[in-house]
Amino acid sequence: MTKNLDLNGLKSIADNYDLFYIDLWGVVHNGVNLHEKAIAVLNELLKKKKMLVLLTNAPRPNKTVQNFLEKMGMDKLLRDHVFTSGEAALNYLKKSYLSKKFYHIGPPRDFDLFYLFEKNKCEDIDDSEYLLCTGLFDDHDKDLKFYKDLLNKHITKKMICTNPDLIVDRGEVRELCAGSVAMVFEKMGGEVVYFGKPHPEVYNQSIDNKNKKILAIGDNLNTDIKGANLLNFDSLLISNGIHRNEIKNKGIQDVSKEYEAIVNFIQSDLKW
Image (cartoon, rainbow, N blue to C red; front, side):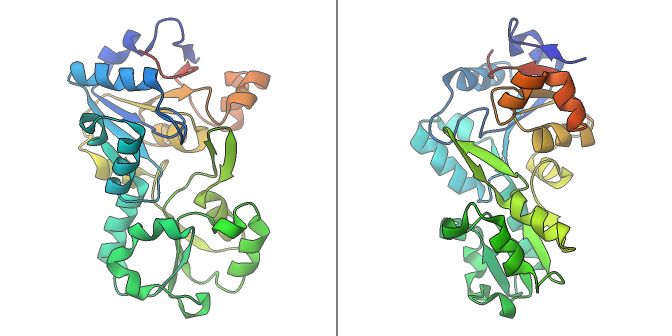
């Protein structure tokens, strides 16, 4: 049974945990502004000497996201806790793919993920040895059929996906993410290596989480909550995130069953 924390706040359970994995987009900010009450939660956790990771499925290195959060007004003390799916992917690429040619699927702004080996970037997908998917092209950001046609002759190549999210809300606008392209590729028979929630690698790279009592907080059942379930962490779903309409219409019990996810706690917005 999912317990609602709207009345008593996170403070009512915080002492039960050593480590908090907290999603950024949809929990701490909406892509445009920081959520002040969520920032207050982060500061309270630090006061209590709790361990926390601001774990995000952003297909960029840690530093890029930290700079983005600085522009939003987040203090350095909090920014230092950021770990991204892009950072986890970059560590893997430097070990295994540094000299291989790749074709980049995603917007030009994501170049900082591969600037160390940009010389291996192919302009023609036919020349590539693997596919690096960080998102959608700016001029094809709503049409998944475009990617089906693009990838049709390349399903024997491995795709590295640096953001397993299917969608994200930027302010009031819903956008497709790299995970949507990867899903198209998988349905065609292609192999995808994912970096980011719900896959264990990004959690384990971010911090020493052994023998810790852990709470994962996020707004996405497919990534934040499934990741917690896979790793046997407790979970807190923020219901005013991407599932807000589903939860409003059907209730959390039915929605969590649909997604085959276990939600221990729910809160409208992250509040102390």
